[in-house]
Length: 191
Image (cartoon, rainbow, N blue to C red; front, side, top):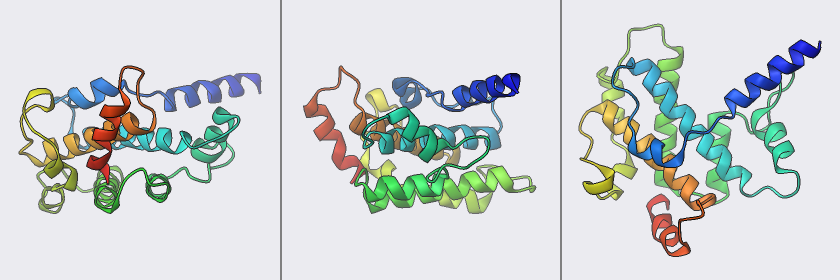
């Protein structure tokens, strides 16, 4: 029984691992990865940003609340453990507006196609490619730190997911070196 508990704790730590904020924004998922894998990684990192945003509103024992509400355990599912529930909860808390909610819904739906379809799908599959026109992409200034404007469906999915995740984290749990002025300037991108 002790070994099982250790294994469950180790798996929980791996599941809760968070990608560095800056690397998530600046480093696209490796081009060598299959589209299915890339879609799941981007969506997972975005889901972690949603968890962090929701947890930023918690009071008291934050880790215990995070575990019970967001992650769950090997015996129970957290009350807010699905991508769908996390998206709606963060939206209800005012973390982002309706257009970003639409983007999150599209990212979740694309992720679900890659995760659950037995068909041979890629970002070039017409239904997926047509879905990769995200609201956030029209709000960003391309060039410089953001790099060139994404053109392929995969690039759009990657940039939308990583940008939304980075913006959510910057606003709800800003790093120490991010000034209040910068946080205020970023907030309208999500509303």
